[in-house]
Length: 220
Ligand SMILES: [Zn+2]
Picture 1 (cartoon, rainbow, N blue to C red):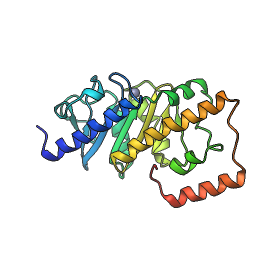
Picture 2 (cartoon, rainbow, N blue to C red):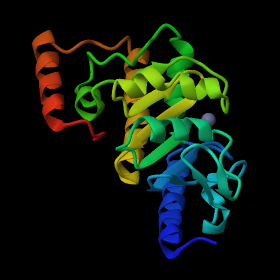
Picture 3 (tube, protein in one colour):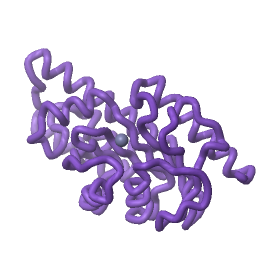
């Protein structure tokens, strides 16, 4: 049984899943969303269900170390737990499969991050957008490859050939980060199709990074 507070947060998670689905950021039973209820309790979307059709009673609860207290949490829960364990400020984690971001990571396997130098929005909204190396979904390895990026303070990252992951101090921050990843990748892909992205002047790039550092660590 969920408490009133847990039901309320479940409803927020469900609305977020519906938004992700309507924006084509996840298909079928893909993707998962989690919220920290307290220091040691995580509320998470269930495994194997289409995320735009779930109900509050489908939600699962687990501890920070992965002990399942209720329901059947996502098969990709290790990634979420890794974020909550590594980043005490993390209140919400979203994993989705944004198609353009995944396509870019497939077409440009040599990229360690999405190139920033042509796009002010990327620098201002998230500082950088790393691409974590491929690991099979649901494995401990998938959680471990995130480690250096989380240590670096990344709140948004593409998972090569798979999807993307964002976290925030609120569900809204994590959601906006996911929407932003796909938007940035769409613009970049269109620029590539039109002949290739052109860089901003170096002095402007420096100023943008300065501005970003003043804005703080949040995804915008
Ligand atoms: Zn996935």
